[in-house]
Image 1: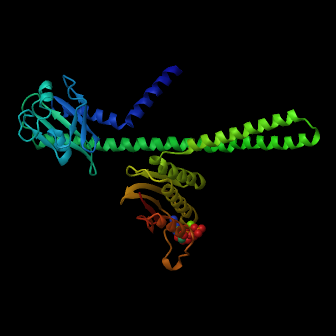
Image 2: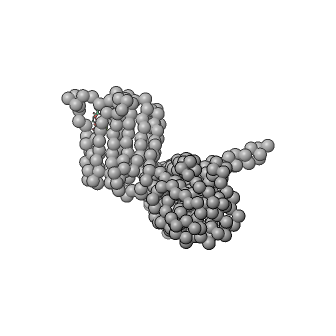
Image 3: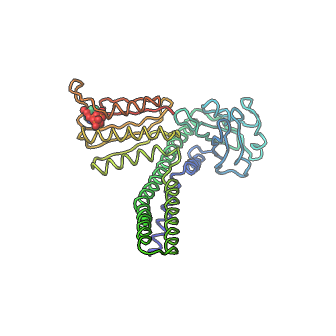
Length: 373
Ligand SMILES: Nc1ncnc2c1ncn2[C@@H]1O[C@H](COP(=O)(O)OP(=O)(O)OP(=O)(O)O)[C@@H](O)[C@H]1O
Ligand SMILES: [Mg+2]
C-alpha cells in the first residue's frame, strides 16, 4: 500500500520535473501540430548557437532523416524564418525558387512537399522555429500561419515559464545548501573548536603535573588532527555555500526576503521577471545589501501588509526593486535623511549603478537598486 503510494508520488515528481524542463515543453507542443492544423508531419528547430537551428522532436515522420539536421541561418525555409523572424511557407519545398535547396534530398527521402514554418519568439529572442509539412502540394495561407503562430506563442510562454521555474528550483537548491553549510558551521565547527581548546588546556595541565612526554605527544597529535578537521570543514563549507554566478543573486536575495518574512511576519514574495546574467560577487553583495536595507526600512517605517521583491535584467544590468504597500514616503519637508539609503546609494554609485526611491503605485514605497553587468 505504502509502496503504491510512493510509486505514485515518484511518478508525480518525475512529471513535475519534466514540466520544469524547457525541452519537454517543446516536445509536447509539437505533438499538437498535426491535428490542430490537419497536417502530415511536424517538427521543431532549436537554436544551437546564434546562427544554427538543430532539428528535432519530429512527429509522424516515416524516416529519421530530419532529426539532428543542423540548419544554418538563412538556409532552407527554417533558416530564413530564423533570420527574418517572420512566418513563411512554400507550396513545394523541392522546387520553390524562394528558398535554398541544401536539404532537398532529406525532404525527398521523407516525401515532403508543402512546408510552413513560424518563429517561436519571446521578446526579441528566437526560442525556436516550429514546422509543419504535407506530403503533397498545398497552398498554405495566412490562416495556417495564424494557427501555427498561436501554437508557437504558447510554446514560447511555456518555455519561458519552464526556464524560470528551473532557475527558481536551482536557486532553492543552492539556498538549501547554504543553510546546511551555516548549520554545520554553527554545530560541527563550534564542536571542533571546543575540542581543540579543551586539548590545549589539558596539555598545559598535564605538563605542569607530571613529566609525561608520551602523553604530551599524543595530545599534540590529537590537537593537530582536530585543527586539520576544522580546516577541512571550512573548505567544504566554502564549496557548499558558494552558489554559481548565474544563481548567486537569486540565492542571496531570496535569503534576505525569507529572513525578513520570518522576522516580521509580513507576506513577502520574490519574483524573477527575466533571465538574469551572471554577476560578479561584488555586485551581488551590493544588490543584496540594498535589498536588506530596503526591507529594514519597510520594517521600521512602512507598517506594510505585503512586500514584493523583483529581480530583472534591464538597461544592460540588473535591478532589484522592493515595493511595499505601507504608509508611503513622508512629505520631503519632514524627511529625516538617515544614513541607510545614502550609504547604499554610494556603494551602488561606486560600481556605476544607482538607487531610486519613489512612491509606489498603490501608496507605499518603491526602492530600486541597479548595477551594470
Ligand atoms: N519603506 C518605507 N516606507 C516609508 N518611509 C520610508 C521607507 N523607506 C524609507 N523611508 C523614509 O526615508 C527615510 C530615509 O531612509 P534611510 O534608510 O536613509 O534612513 P533611516 O532608515 O531613517 O535610518 P538608518 O537607515 O540610517 O538607520 C526614512 O527615515 C523614512 O522616513
Ligand atoms: Mg534605513
